[in-house]
Image (tube, rainbow, N blue to C red; front, side):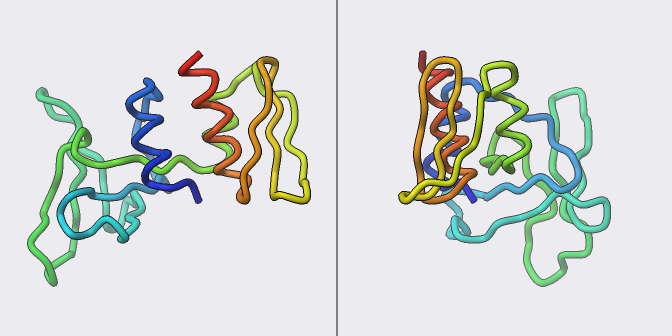
Length: 128
């Protein structure tokens, strides 16, 4: 899984998120930074309102968070989502002694985790 820091950098660099089932996210700065949530039609749904998207928490009576605006959460994209964001720039993913290396048309990025390598490669492209 990518780090929250990488996810924050991706958002700042312009990676766009259209929330959908299975997407992971964290709620920062509310003493829940280590809790990863998953969008699900059963418990966490995305609602479209005129003011923007709101992420609703259904059936969570044990704590007092009913909903939160999308802009207040940090998306943790999965490997296939990161690869899709790389698009035609993606060349390959290789297992290496140090973990994984993602090669793009513009260069490469290595990390201990494949998703983290994808994130770094995408950050390199977005930061250009």
